[in-house]
Image (cartoon, rainbow, N blue to C red; front, side, top):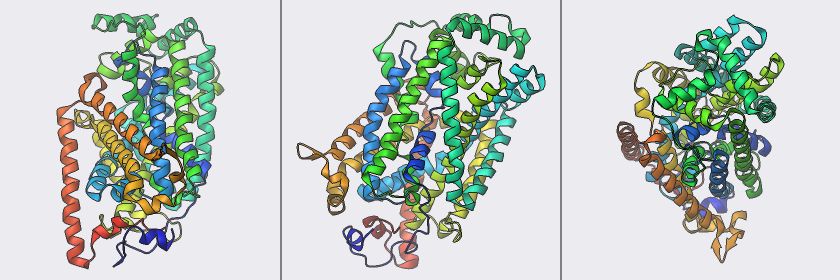
Amino acid sequence: MSETQRSSLGTKTAQPFMRESSGLVRAMPPYSAFAYNILNIGVIFPWVYLLSAGAFPGSNIALGILLTGVFASLLAYVYSGLASVMPRTGGDYLFQSRVLSPWVGFPIVATMVLFWFLQWDALGGWLTSLLGIAPMLTGLGLTTGSAWLISAGSWFTTPLGIWITTIVFGAIATFTLIRGFELFVKIQWFMWYGFLISFATIVGLLLLTPHASFVSHFNAAVSKVSPSAGSNYYDYVISYERSQGFNPSLAFSWAATLGVMPIALTSLGWVGYAQYQAGEIRQASSFRKQLFINLGGGVAATLMMALLAFALTRSVGYSWLSAAAYGSYMTGNLSMPIPPWFSNLVVVLTSNPLIVVLATVGVFLNALQVVYNVYVGQTRMAFATAMDRILPAWVFKINDRTGTPVNAQLLFFVLGGVVYSYVYNFVPGWITYTLAVTAVATVMYIATSLAGALLPYRMREVYQKSEVSRLKVFGVPLITIAGAVSAVFSAWMLYYYLTVPSLGVASLPSELLMLAIFLGWLVYFAIRRWYVKKRTGIEVDLAFKEIPPD
């Protein structure tokens, strides 16, 4: 960034940042960041398809995803504009703290990324184990007749199996990320193309499998995994859930289809997640490149999710999917021998072990990428706040040879990959306190959307020199319009989360915990601000009048 840009945000009376340069290395090309965004959005996240069918029977899941994608595209546009003006590491924290206020940006983003991303450390291992490894082993067991492989697949669905998986792959991710971000970029190419192969295989299998054929294959597979389950487990799932009171109308409903949107947003809301490592993305100041990364990645992920939803419901049957989702995923009143994750359902459709591998290896690799990208987001958020002197200096330690934050990486592996994942998998009732995490993310989207809307007015000089400033509608900056609409949409989704019990977010204990964490970070910021001033004489507020050094 030029000195003119730096000075446009405020007169520099003292060095407000921890160091004159970040020390990070721009190792990720735009296409890699595009792939990163699609993988982190989570086409594979199973709750989008299951919760939509179970909580909103009668919805058109694919249509609901497409509608969400339209609004998420506005959020992606906002991220693209903000990132092109401030192409530095920090993502939502950087944008909100500079455009709105650090009193807003730090506690909101710290609540989500520094604290509740510990849950995503655990979820990354959960996805790797349940969606990747377990279906692969189960499918290989079914196609080869190996009871041992089926048993091994079952072990990876247990709390111990998931916890061990989380630790092992978390350790691998930590080691490679410390070795250098460039190494991760190289590894991600295998994840990306592996995911594309599996996605094509999964969708192809589902589209080529008639409903009657799926029923036959599913029942045969269940009989092998659990002989005592009976010969027609498919119909049993539907009839059992009816006996439990789940017998909704499955006629198309616009109200139900709109209900899919807050669920789909749990994936598509992350359209700008690559900006947490914007200081390591090449050509990050290019608005066109940012549109490719954020908007392009979001549109591609939307289309892939909608296609998967269409293929899945067409083959397995909507009534069965909604019953299986309600019983196995939402209420837990039915323990299914083959849980209704789409990767589980696909492996029963073939007798060829190679196709099983092709269908599941990319799901495993995408889940593993989630393990990586959660650590990347956590460490870069911590890095950005330490750069602003909010977190202690030791968090900021950069390996001079590899250009990566070492201490932060080790910290989050221990806290999230080991300790929190143990709590997540073994402590009964803990999930009750985590239900409102989705609402916290949506509050973050609202704040970033508002930052985008106000960018032309709060950072006028820097904005006017940017590419994004050229786009206006009747004289109003397009980023202002996109940000305002995105903020309203996100607030609408937040209303869903807080008022619709079937979404599993509206939980008073969880909401109180979220509020307590937010207030805790707010108090921490006030104390840290005072402490830095007293100890060093530096006004922390000065940092928020400038874009951090590259």
